Image (cartoon, rainbow, N blue to C red):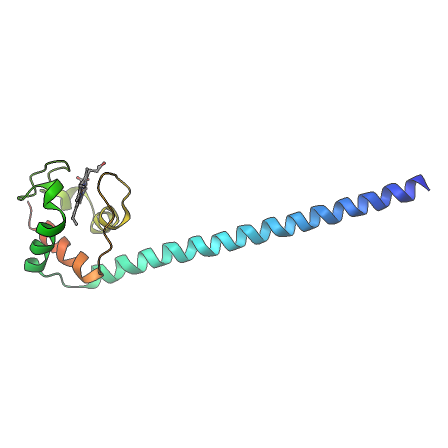
Length: 128
Ligand code: HEC
């Protein structure tokens, strides 16, 4: 009698573990899907940007509107660092990340179209 009731408890317990296990696996699966989509969308953006031909004059205009407040009118640095030869220090995809991600406050993240990002890159490449 005692043994049968304890095995019922064990059964219940193992059922509970099974449910928790399945739940955990489901959560891990769902999070990996989100993580994958998030990274995929990122690399899509970068790939798209790198394929485009940037316009220097638009890039200069965008820089004046969005970046000179911190990087200075000649990009020699103010609050933010001097951006001359930044394209030698950082790869294009690192610069894209820097501009769009907001990972280094106080520099904000910019939501810009790949074409405009490409224009900015073209300008940054002229700063030697
Ligand atoms: C609110 C101020 C601010 C604005 C606006 C800003 N930045 Fe920055 N930026 C910074 C600061 C501060 C850093 C240094 C971050 C760090 O390394 O911790 C930085 C770093 C960078 C870097 C990396 C430099 C290096 O040597 O590692 C690049 C490239 C850059 N900014 C480009 C831009 C561009 C392009 C724009 C305009 C679209 C822009 N920033 C607008 C403040 C700003």
